[in-house]
Length: 239
Image (cartoon, rainbow, N blue to C red; front, side):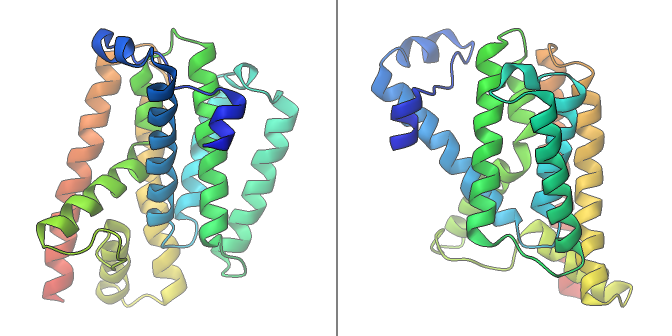
């Protein structure tokens, strides 16, 4: 709240007339921006259950932002951003080797920086489809939403942690099905999920102004998640 108030950071416009009119109220606009940050931060913490999953996901997004020359719209120059990417890549290496873990503070910090950079880019280049930005954040945000819905449907407290996330089912399946060691199953699960995201972002990055395509990719990602979740859950229960 303090950060948003000091920087006057707002997620505008949404390009939906009714919503944009509603958000002309500064207080409502700030509250919506805070809500977006909270969804992203908590979702990022949810997917930080495997080595390399969150760090690689963020690094992939940074790679495409750098490739698209969108860093000029932030408070960083290309050299500073490249150094940031190298630092994150170094942390990723240590994480994959099981020598370093992000923890809550790491997940919160990286996702907060990611959210700030994406908002700055979008607000400075309104030609970009807002759904391109949403697509880049689909995984942690949908993981958050799906977890709340899933737990609520079973009358469980959405605030309590569990081990029924997609990445955890994938980890258990690979470990038991192929008799992999924990670290290998862990890293393999992260890389498989992020390979899918890398491919989706590759398609999206070639059409950042094409709203219909971004919406289609967003729907595809959500459908792929739900189908994969159901299949993996059933397979894990049958092992």
